[in-house]
Image 1 (cartoon, rainbow, N blue to C red):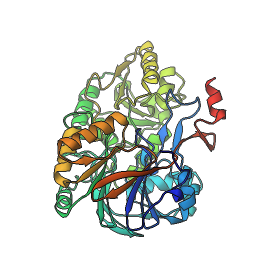
Image 2: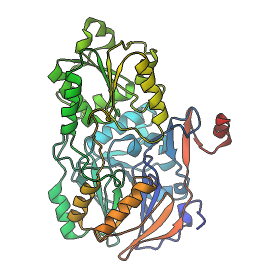
Image 3: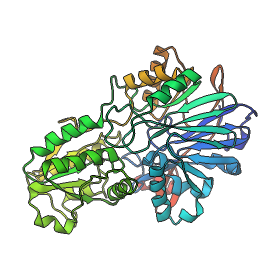
Image 4: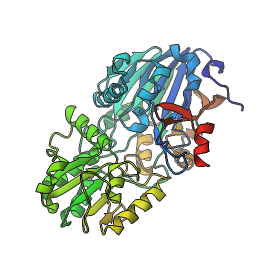
Length: 466
């Protein structure tokens, strides 16, 4: 089926509901989903992904191409952000001038969005509305409800979308953490009640659909981090995803329990830490020690939190490994802990980093050596629990590569639930009988080059590889 260039060319029928992923389906990251009904468009999430060894040199940030929305921009009733991770909110300030619709999100996510918009000089231009978890809101023909789940960041929400006689449960990112270290427990009563009232479609997270069992609780990760850090005689540096505030909570507690003082290296890590504190999370996080005061502390009392868990060349951990950080030099018998998973495509960068650290006689601990990372996404037993609670008639796997979405569809079939395979650009008609593709719309990826967004297949970028 030949893609059309914009959504105004799609033969939508009034009184019917449609779903169009423009990012995040067939890939992990860069989530942007569109719902259409009665000439109105609802956007759910506007995220980025990061460059890896396959992208042109110098491209660290990648956004979805929203050209398909330009002809219908005036018909966008709102942009809903499910939570504050970069792959869901990180493209908002880059794409705002092409979208220009009101934004709705919970307070923590709003705080992250305001900081990004402020840094881009857009804060006064964007109508940003805070919505409390559990709230209901009518946006045009879309009746919306925010449902509390658990993840690795405060206030992750699923979105219940009701319109045209359909009920869609859009999961966002989630897991079932029985002992979250921050934020609320997932709202199991509401999930069961939704199953009683009738959910037709789940548009759901596929990230861990290939993994049996449960993702594990952050409380378990805290225990492992404590065991690893407590036995180190010298300085410990930990790197994790900057936006993983649940992990920051664990590390703050470990610092208290081991008598270590905390220093943060890296702007994004500092920003998320300050945002969490300002919105009522991480209340007991230790007071930070400025880098210039580290020399006054014994190495055995230092806990360094650094950006760069994926080997990013300009992040703090890469500079520490190269001996190029202006504020700190790692020494023999220090320990570096990678409290994160390896995102596919970053293996070579991380292997180089491990080698550099080993050359300095620095001990390296990854999740291969100790259970110091738990995923923020549901494994297969969590998916089974959710589907037994919601009892949907149909599942549309998103948020994953092809193998993840295929495994998600297979699991749904195991439970007697129909599924529809989708990739970016597919236009699905959501009917009582299921989801049917009626058209395709052109999609793409834009790399941030300087201050401009450029298609990744643009000659100016492809020539960088030559």
